[in-house]
Length: 227
Image (cartoon, rainbow, N blue to C red):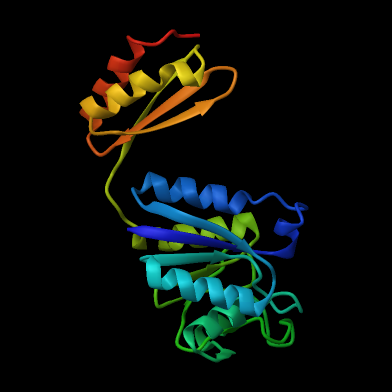
């Protein structure tokens, strides 16, 4: 399963808010063997949201969109997703019923709180107010991290892939000096390799067979200078 993540918010693009949602989602999806091939941030603009969602839903098994839910003037994500799918936005009876069960009356709710793309499956917000939505492989989640995480966990079983295993080797050598050994490693073992330099070089190995990953890591450790 391959997924694209779209985060929505002018504040993300301005650098005023750290995009922790994208990091959390990528890690959680990777844990489930799901490949994330795109992470894109767009402004609070219907046309931009619609364009990116429409492009990605044609390329990936699912698109997860976070942020911009609610009834305020800059909460336009539902409208953007609806536009991408050629749907109208309308009040969702199930979402409204959930909110009423949570103790909210119509008078308590700002206009538009329970509005979702027509035909969407409502996703209950157990940690907040604004509901999410799912339709045609597009999942729309809140931007507040606690709300987003709780809502994702309620649908996590819908995201599955091939179990992968990881190991890491730390080398106290320049990255350029390791190129031949990394190339040899990739020839010998069916693993993917990532190299991340810093004070030392962290070489991450990933594969679908746990024994192969462990064997590859042991082989490399014997051939690098450890810190």
